[in-house]
Image (cartoon, one colour):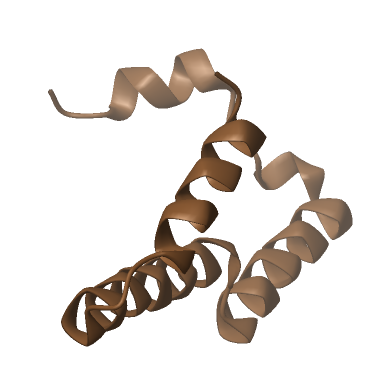
Length: 77
């Protein structure tokens, strides 16, 4: 069964529910899921600026980049 069919079944079941506590519990779960979904896509502006600043530094001075194999040798295990 695809996700759209599952949603349709759940919606029909919710329409038949009269228990206020169950309705509130479902609403709380949906609110929580929506907040979590938003968090996963929201990148703070400060982080975005930091990445863009680093890109600019590399563009201006590509020699500052290290070869990955050379960098691995300097890492402690």
